[in-house]
Image 1 (cartoon, rainbow, N blue to C red):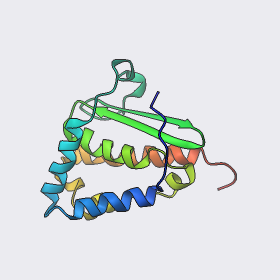
Image 2 (cartoon, rainbow, N blue to C red):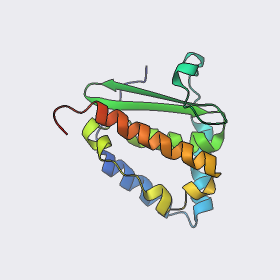
Image 3 (tube, rainbow, N blue to C red):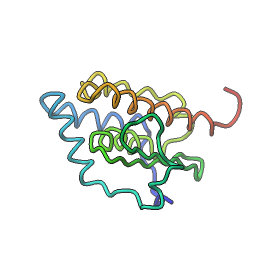
Image 4 (cartoon, rainbow, N blue to C red):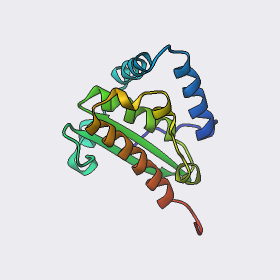
Length: 148
């Protein structure tokens, strides 16, 4: 289980802060390198969470994604054997963690494309990273209350 954290910012505020940080870096390669360095510092998932039950299918390397719903909010973790996947999926999970289902259902994190982050990866990994974004949005949508 992920540690409880207080949520003081909205998803949009967290995303705006990340984009501002990334824009301070001179080019897409520098931005991507910054995310990779953060991924290297991120603790790996516990062995019991690195199971087939949490594997993202269709990826040549192992990628795990763990969603949880607690206290009316969504919480996410990810890990991968590939540092590039750890970097981008970790970024998405960090942003989305603590968000309400409503925020996630309408989330469109297109900044990663605009800032050139996605194109730093091989096409198959791009597809995997974008699939994790869809999974996060779908998870939020599935936990919304009331009619669409």
